[in-house]
Image (cartoon, rainbow, N blue to C red; front, side, top):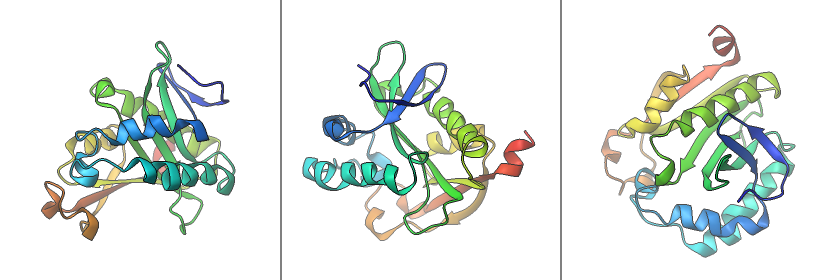
Length: 191
C-alpha cells in the first residue's frame, strides 16, 4: 500500500516517494534477498540494525541536504501499491551537486518488467528539466548485464572501466571490475 506521503514522481506504472522513518522494514526485506544483493555484497544481507541506524537516517538526511529534489525514493506499483524497491538520483557525498548518480534496487518480483528503465527514464527527465543537473552517471559491475542494459536503453554512454572496490572483492565476477556510464544534459536533449 502506498503511504500517505507526498508523491515525488509518477510514471505510467510507478509512484516514487520519499522514504520515511517507518520504512525500515521495506528496506530490510529488500536487502535480505540474496539475489537482489548478488552484485553488491555477494548475496549477504544487510543487517537490520545497519538499515535502521545508518542507511535510513542517511536517506532521510539526504532530502534536507539536497533540497528534496535529489535522493533515494521508494518505488511502488501504481496498480497494486506494492513496494518494488527504490531509485536514486543524488550527487556523491562530497561531489558537485550538478552531477547525479542514477541507481535502483528492485525486488525480484519486479525484475524483467521494464520498471528499472521506466523509473530511471523518469528520473533523467526530472534531472534535466526540473533540477540543475548537468550529468547523470551510473556504475555497476562488468558482469551485471541487467543494469548495463538499462543504462544502454537510456542512451547512457560507457565512459570508463573502474576497479572493483576492496570491500566487493568477494562478489562473483569482481575480478572483471566495473563500468561507469554517463549522459549529459546536452546528449539527452539531442535524443
